[in-house]
Length: 327
Image (cartoon, rainbow, N blue to C red):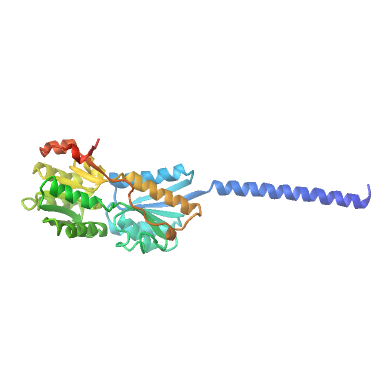
C-alpha cells in the first residue's frame, strides 16, 4: 500500500473513532440530564391535616411528571423563630427549589433568598403578605397557589345569616398570622352591610385556644374558624366548646369539618398542593420562572357538612343547600 493511501486510511479511522466517541459522550450527557435528581426544601409552619394534604398533592404532581426529587422536610411546629432558621438552613443547603407550605413559611423563605425559586401554597393573601407584586405578575422568585376562593367568605356569611339567623359571629385567631388578620378584616368589612358583627378572640399559641373560645360564650350566636394555623392545630378545643354550648361553627376548610366543625365552603388542599407542584415542574424543567407564573386560586368551591354535628345542634339539613357530607 502506498504511503499516501496509508495516511488516508489512518485519517478515516481516526475520524470514525472521534465521531463515535462524540456520539457516546452525547448519549451519556443526555442520560445524565434526563435522570437529574433535584433537591427540594420543604418548609411547613405546623403539622395539621390540611397542610399535610397540600404537601401530598405537591409531591404527587412531581411524581406524575417523572421528576426525581430528594425532599428535605422541616416543620416549625408553630414557632416563627424556628421557621426563620428553617428558611436559612434550606438556603445554606443550596436546594433547587423551596416549597413553602403556609404564609409564615413563605415569608421566611422569601426573606432568606431572592435567588432560589420559591413555590408556596396554603397562603391566603399573597399580595398582602408581600410575597408577590400582584396575582397576575408575581415578579421576583416567588409564586404559588392560595387557599382563598373569592366566594368562600361571602357564601359562609350568607349561610350564617340567612339559614342560621346569626347576628354575632365569634372568631378565634392568631393576630400574628398575616393571613388570619386579612381574613378577619374581610369578614368585618362584609358584615357592615349585613347587620352582623364580629366578636374577636385573639391567641398567641395553641395552648390559648380553648380559653379564648370560652371567652366568647354569652357574646356570640355562631362562630367562624378561618384557616388559622395556630387555631386549626388545636381545633378540637374549639369544637368541644362550640358543640357543648350548641353554637353552630362554620370552618375554613374540609378537614375541620371532618374533625367536628358544622360546615365549610371550601376545596381540597390536596388540589392546591398539586397545582403548586405543577408550577414547580415548569420551573425545574426550565420552562418558566416564578416571576412569569401567575398566582393561582382554588378551582372548585363546594359546601361540605358534618351530619353528626348537625344532629348535635338539632339542625335540619335542607336539600336546597346542595351540601355534600364529610366522611
